[in-house]
Length: 287
Image 1 (cartoon, rainbow, N blue to C red):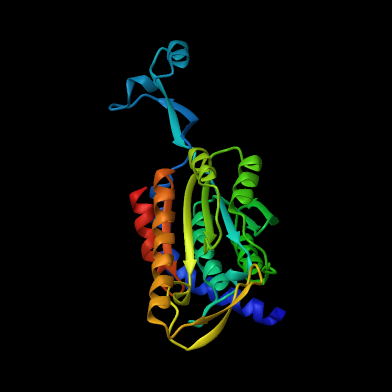
Image 2 (image 1 turned 45 degrees about the vertical axis):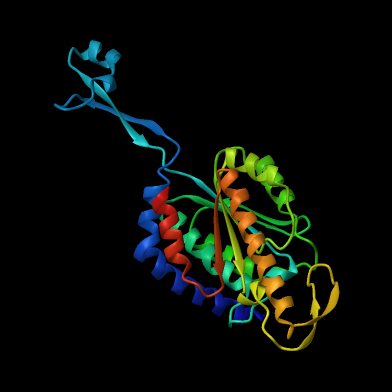
């Protein structure tokens, strides 16, 4: 895409996602993720109804009247967005590529975080980590993230989710909100999910095109694997072949759901073009 096209696309995504975010997601996001605890704010005179355990005994003794400590929520959180940029994510048959859909969801998440003064960072990965955007705050930073996801060079290589997760955990020690975007076409070590979900709050989001799950009857076609380069001829007119393919994809999704559930992590299976805002709203509500 040319620069003017990128700017236009980013602006369109901002307008679309900010409407959704401000309408429903931002408030639910704040309710779901209330921060890491309480921190001391100030001391004030005791008022009827204050908790006795909040009394500041040193100041009370000094002034011979009761004072209480005022505590406030430690709100600031860090959101990390991990995006699979293997070549299979640069694909789409319904007017929207997977990468464009990911950019839109990431924008909604980013604006929700920005509205609560939280930091947002990004890791782009495939067979290795290709780019890291350190966590920062603000609208301009979110727009930069959208542009980066849209314009990244999508790599013809097998994605290695394990490496991305391991890298993130090595860099970000404090508990963070982690959103992992991938089509999960490649294998991964489920042990890494368990380790990551113990340290962070993890949501895996499988982004798929409808043709990923079911191939229509279009006769003999040459199927090309965008990541490995492998090619194979298939007779899509064969009903048994189509059924076997669809069942294998269903089994893959069931295995993913089981892995994430066993790891105490969350999982979503989202088709490009679907209303992701409802799914995110329900996710935040459950938290």
